[in-house]
Length: 217
Image 1 (tube, rainbow, N blue to C red):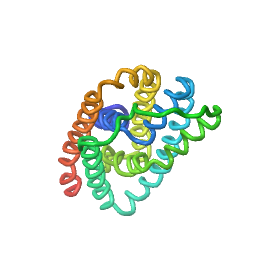
Image 2 (cartoon, rainbow, N blue to C red):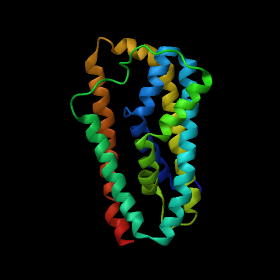
Image 3 (tube, rainbow, N blue to C red):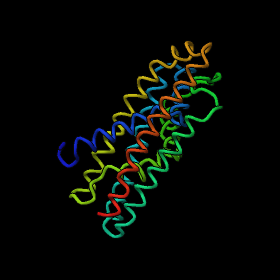
């Protein structure tokens, strides 16, 4: 155990967070486009705004979910099933043919540091992927029979934020080099989608095995 959460819950959350942060979405597209157009500093400032958005979502979701679980226990089962369906949908979106690579961006006018931070925050707050993740994914790893549901949610959310910030920071720092490398190698973009889609699908399958157990609890 790592205090209130088990090592398996912490590891599962980290794996799910890693799979999701590697799946192209509004946050990644914005961070990469700013990093390529305006440099690494701009990308990191934008990432700070994105991180604040995660903290806001985590706080709102965890405080609300703890109350909901106590009043309407069957919603916990529904959220677990929703999380499985959501991960499955993300896996299909990543694995299906078509679409453009994340690192294929056009020229952009430079923004101020405040606008970079603000846009990173707003992009994350308006990102349905981030919203559903906190409402549907974190409950997958909360032990409803245990104590400290709020604390469990914050710990799990902290793991997700840490993984997301670290991975996105690496992407920001390497985005220019990656874009140049992928410019003449479209097959690499396809393989990136296949790998992340497979990770999401595997996580969905593993979580789906727990839904019947939660219904019997």
